[in-house]
View (tube, rainbow, N blue to C red):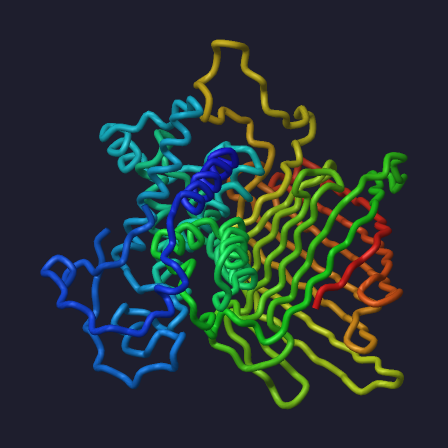
Length: 523
C-alpha cells in the first residue's frame, strides 16, 4: 500500500512535467463570447477529468466584466466555478477520477506482483457474498497507508469543486469500491473506516496546505515550481490543475483556502525513552518534528470544516514516521467572551520501538483563555472528550502465550505477496478519549505547555480486553533570538489492559521519555 502510494505520487508528478499549461497571456486575455456548446458538452461539460463526463449546470446570466487581468464573473460562473480561483465543479468527474485512482492502485499492485491484484468478476462476487472481515495487514499499512489512499479519493472530489461533505461521501465510495472490487482479499471493515475517516482528515489537511504553497498571481517558472510544490503535497489536485490549465490561470486564491492566521514550528533534537522499569536506555535517538497551526481553532464562530486545524509530524525517534496527529475543527462556537466550544475530528498515528497506537475519533472541547496578564503573559486552557470510531493498539499476549510476532514464510510457502497471513500483532475496537491542555504564552509564544490525555479501546477483534492508555507531557520552551528557541520535554506513557477473562491478570506498562531540541518558528 505504501509503495503503491509512492508510485501514485510519481505518476502525478509525471503528469505535471509533461502537461503543457496555457500561457499566462491566455489567462489574461480579455473575455470573449463563448461559442454555443455542442450537445455532448451540454450534457458532460468541457472540463477534462483527471486522467470525462460531467454534470453541467445552467450557464448563469451575464455579470459585469472584471478588471483587466482577472477572469470576469461571467467567465468563472459559466465554467461552473464557485469563485474565480476555484476548480470547475463536476460530480461526474469526481466519481470517474476516484475510479481511475483505484485503477492505478490496481495496476501498481499488479506491477509489484501482488496476487491480490488478480481480480475477476468471480472474486468480486465472492467478496460481496462473504461480507465484511477484519484483515491482517501490518500496522503501518492499515493506519497510515489506507488513510493516505483515502486522502487521494477525497482530493479527487476537492479537485473537481466539491465541498468538504460531498468529498467525504466520495471518499467512502472510493474505499468501498476498492474493498469489494480492487483486491481478491475479502472486504475489510477496518480498512473501510480507516480509509474513509483517515482519508478525510489527511485529505483536507493536505488540500489546504498545498494552497499555502501556490501563488495564483505569479507567472512563468516561479509559478510552475510553486505549482509543483503544491502537487508534492496534494498530488491529485496538483495533477488536475496541470491537466485543466488552472496551473497557469491568473486569479485570486479561493477565499476559503486563505487562513485567518498561520504558525509553524520546526524542531530538531534527540530523545531518550525509558523501559517498563523506568530505566532510560543508553542510545539516544534523533528526531525531526514539524507542527502547524492553520487558522485559529481557539476563537471564532465557524461552520466551515477545517478552516482551522493543527497538524504534527515526527520523523525518527524510533520509527520512520513515528508520530502523526491531525485535529480539524468541524464546528466552532464562542460562548460569551472567553469560552470557545469546538467539535473536532482527530487522526492519530504513533509507532515507535516500544508501542504503537492509531485512531479515528471525534470529540467536543471547551476552551477558556485569559489574556492581559502581567508582563505580556496569557493563559489558555482546554478540556475535551469524545468517541473513537476505531482504534488500534498493540496486542498484549494472554498469560502463557508467546509474544506476538508475524511469521516469515519459507520460500514457496504462503499465499503470495500482498496476502497477509498474520498473526496481526494489534487489536481493533471502538472506544473513547478525554484530556486537558494548558498553555502559558509570552507575547503570543508558548513557554509552558502541559498535556494530559487518555484513550480507551474495547477490543472487538484480537485479544478481548479493555485498553487504557494515558499520557502526561510537559514542554518548557525558551525563545532565544528571533525565530530560534530551545525546548525540553518530559513525557510519561502509562498503559493498562484489563482482560475479559478474569483468569488473566491486568497488564501494566509505563514508559518515560525526555526530549531536548532546538526550535525554529515560522509565522
